[in-house]
Image (cartoon, rainbow, N blue to C red; front, side, top):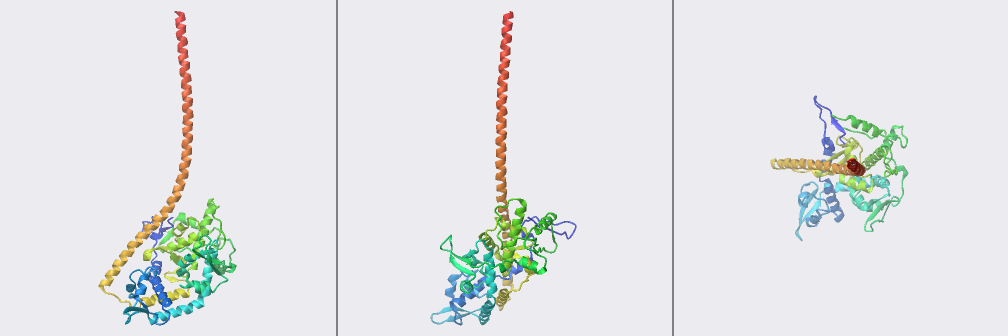
Length: 453
């Protein structure tokens, strides 16, 4: 659904024909995604040093890191990656045996210690985010491997099983999965009603007039120079006036089939995705992880299209060779509205990563131009892929409608055939009777002529 039409800067109107958010690029939010390039593998590598070499100087031989390229999500050869950050890692040679040793720099060690101290202060907040996520789940549990995939987005430490789950036994329990004994599930021990309030409800309560189940409007943020089309504006007005159902409440969307119920299901789905993104410390997540989580939360089948349809609430960035869903209200230009200690630390790590980097000459600038061109090509590929994914879901719905229409048309054709057959049978009977009468009359006339002669 194309929600926006560009205001004409001249007399001609420019109307976007694309259904995806690719027509509504937001440079500030693209920068939010792009500036974290290499941050995730950098922190994985940093944690590997301190966990496998806890005693200063925390050095490890390069030969022990090289086989871990894929598990540490390193984009290329480990040595090349380490040399990208001269202010974070140092190299040295050991004499016996002769090996290249890699050590964290003093600045990185100090920042890591600050991170450990910070976590001790904010661990209650981190645990609450995880509790809320489990409360949204219909079964109040999630597989551990799913939580591990969301660790970065929830702000959990790499050793969260030991440092978070074990410290809050009244909240979390780990046990074997009922469906697969090889998997472990993270279960919620106690449902907390005081936490079953969404970010949208908290904001409404702070302003005053709000009661449970009354309509709540989602903040809509559109780029400058764009406005909703009249049909879309009407749809959004109707959508905003629908009752707001909290994502923490059970909602049976399976039996809802009429139009008003489907609209209510859509608003509930938007509300769930809105709350999930609010739980993530950066107010964003890779789209494939969001889809994985949505499937585990048993959201309606069409939840994938909601992100693209409501591009006043969500933004999809194609930077860094992937798709990232960003909650628009979470940012004012490229700055987080809600301050977070973990995000502040990540900004410090980013600053350290860029310290001491060579400015580069013509060769490096040419390489940068080439990389930018390649990233633009990847973005266009992802935009096309996004449109193809959305068209696939549309095609599935169209196929279902077409199959129903085909069944109806087949029944109609069968009825017409039967009617034609009946008419043909009646026609044949009439023709036969007519021919019999005609031949009988001819024979009687012939007999009369013979008797007269």
